[in-house]
Length: 260
Image 1: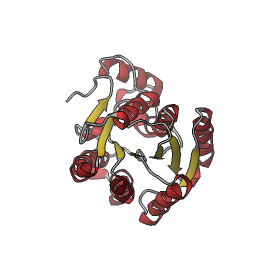
Image 2 (image 1 turned 30 degrees about the horizontal axis):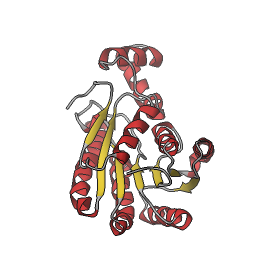
Image 3 (image 1 turned 60 degrees about the horizontal axis):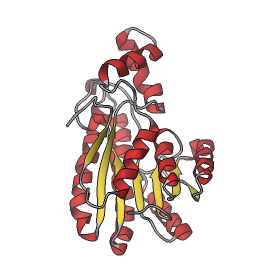
């Protein structure tokens, strides 16, 4: 698929990986719908300005991906503005850290609802339009934690393993309509998830500061010797949107920290 003048929805598009994806798509000529929560309105506007700086159009849309009515409104708002949906990137996600035996039921439900149910609802909403047009790309953001269990991340791992399973099923179901569905598995990205949730826990386990823990962790864990960036993830998304004959894949973008 050529991306010039296509229309892409990026959930969780206000900041971090979502912003990196939005900018990578805009750089290729795609118009971008930045879907996120009202609480990050300022960051949504900043991302929109950056998208427009690439010469693309931006649409801001508030959406809680756990809510079918809001997801439906997002889809309709996109069609009202642009008349088409060519790309959906299911990036919205949340995380927290707790051993399974200490994990509250409510927190399990929250993480699974955003990360997995949100991917399901958004895909369900756009798939009929893509099927009718016999063209489309869905890219789901999973994680290296969707490849291998991680201590203290049982709920997050379950959600991201689930994203890969859903990706493969959607790939089979939508292939006859020429719609590809793939996943990207980021590794160690300097993002709000890492800074607010993972790094404090990692630093405590290492008995050091968050900055020192980050430097040591990425140096020792990543064969390429550096963390990943939001731009790295955006690059992978763009590749999958261009690719006509890749579907059902889950591509690692982690500098080699998890292979296979």
